[in-house]
Image (tube, one colour):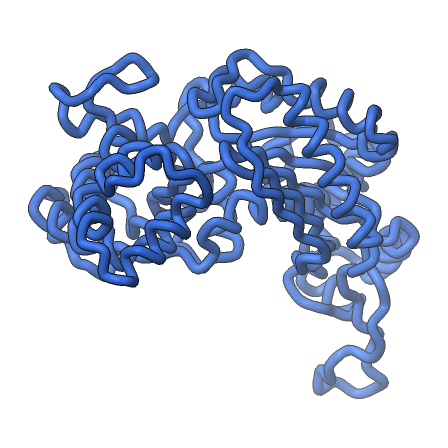
Amino acid sequence: MRETDGLRAGPASQQGMRRANLALVLGVIASARRSRAEVAAESGLTRAAVSSLAEELIAAELVVEEGPAAPSGKVGRPGTALGLNPEGPAGLGAEIGVEHLGACVVDLRGDVRAWRRQEIRNRDRRPAAVMADLAELLRRAVADAGLRPAGLMLAVPGLVGDGGGVLQRAANLGWEDVSLAAELRLALRAANAEALAELPVGADNEANLGGLAELWLGGAPEHFLHVSAEAGVGSAIVVGGRLMRGAHGYAGELGHVPVRPDGPLCACGAYGCLEQYAGETAVMRAAGLEGVRGDWVALLAERAEAGDEDVREALGGAGSALGVASAGAVNLLDPAEVVLGGGYARLAPWLLPGMRAELAARVTVRPWSDERLTVSRLGRRGPLLGAAVGVVRAIVADPGRLDA
C-alpha cells in the first residue's frame, strides 16, 4: 500500500466500470459536500447512476446525507447534500522512531480522532519487542477513536523496498531485512487485537510519508524537496504532485549525500555524509551534549532559545551542511521550494541562516530567493499524519477495495 496515484487501467468489465464509477462519485463528494444532481453534473454520470452509486456508498458507511444542499439558483427544492461519513472506515497510521513510537487514527474527512506517542528508545532493540509495544499503542489509539480502521500504514526510519513490506536497512535502529507487516501482525495477535491484525498493512520511509503529508495537508506546491530529521536525515522529492521513488523505491536518501568527501566515516560505510554534520549524534556532539538522553530536538531548541552559544554554533554548522546538500539537490531537480520539516522545523531559527547562505552561493539553475526555503507547519507530526491520511486517500480513490 503506497500513496494514492489513481486507478490502474484494467479490463472494461461491468464490475470494473462500477468500481471506477464508485471512485469517481466518492472523489467528487470528498472534494466538497454535493447534492446528487451536482455530483451528476460534475462527474458526467446520469442522475440515476449517481443515485444508485450514492446508495451503495451510504450502505458502505462511506457517505452520509447532511441535510439540504446549498441553493443552486434553480427552481424547486434543493437536493440533499452528500458528504464523507466521519464515523465510517478510518485510516490508521503507525510510526517507529529511534526514540519514540506513534499511532494515529484519522476519519474519512482527514480529521485526527486519536493520537498517541510513546517516548521509548528503540535503537538496537529486537523488532519483535518494538512491535509488541507498537501493537499495544495501536490498540489503545483505535479504542480512543471508536472507529473501524480500513488499513494500516507504518512509517519507519529506513529503506523500504518497492513492495512496502520489507525494511531493507535502518542503520539508526540497527535493523536489516525485517518483514514489517508479518512482525506487526504477530504482535497484534499477541495483543489480542485480531481485527487489526487482519487489516491490509503497508510501510514506507518516514521522510516519504512526511513529504506526502506536506503535499496533502501542508500547502506545499506540486514540485518541492522536503528535508527532515529525527535521528537521521531524510528527504522526499515530489515532482508534479507525485512522490519520486526511484528505480527501487530508495530515492531521497539526502542524509547519505557526501558534503565533505574527506569527512568522518558514516554508519552507511561512506565518508563525509550529511548525517555526520546534521544528524542527531553529530549535532549533539558538536554542542557538547554527546551522551545526554532524551528528546534531542526539544533539548537543543530550549538551549538555543536560552542563548547557549555552543548549541547555536552547532546548529549553525548543521544548517550550512544542510544548505550544501540541498543546493546540490536544487541544481539537479529544480524544485519550487525546499521545505524544512520533521525535527528541523523546530530548529529552523538556527538552521535557516546557514542554509540560506549556502543555497544562495551554490544554486545555479536560476537565481535563488530565500522565499523558496520554507518551514513545515506539520513538523514532527508529518510522517504519522501522512501514514494515516494515506490510508484514507486510498479508500477514496478506490472504495471498491473494501469489498475486494
